[in-house]
Length: 263
Image (cartoon, rainbow, N blue to C red; front, top):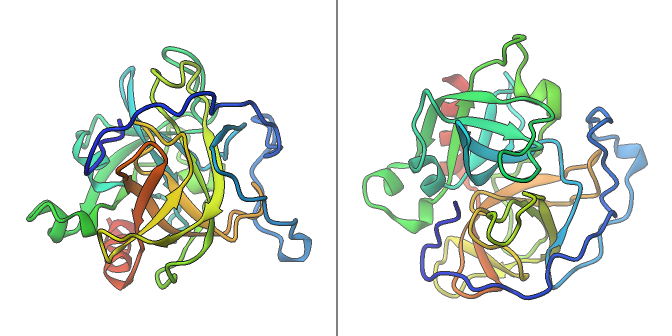
């Protein structure tokens, strides 16, 4: 579930208008970025819209229960996903798993299967002090039943550890079933700006990122499923029905990621 750090959300009526501009099909294999064929950037939006999703973005699951969004971040072994720290706290290592490309009513479907979480890395600033400036986590995944890494199946976004606060990002997430009974992923492309409340955070204003979207990847330079850009942070909070925030990844986040990559 999306657990807001400051206040709860209210619905943004009429937000989930169906669009098909992302153009990805579950039947097509994920592709790696091809720099010589970069499409134009998506146009900015003020409300998120339902989308066919991104193979490397999915939900955290435990049995039939699912909560929060997570995404694959490129790593040497292909076994690391990023999410919000408060999302990782809501699960249990050994029973928690990552389901990329999840969708569908009630129990939903798992087009790529699931990968069990074997280790969780959160910053001491979060785990010891509950400091919102460190509300991110990196999870190490086991291979699937066929011995494959998650990245080899669904691809990954490259991390950016030194992003500035003003970027154009595309954010993918899974609102909870109260607002999204079919468990459809949503996406919004918009511009970030510094958050006035936390110096570590950046903010976007785009309606539709309700409970369930915590952990959503913020992808700068995104150009489509074949050009996923750079992961600069994950959605961790917000204080109105349209505002969402993320902690910018930095050197401290990178050290945590490297620990997850070695686990």
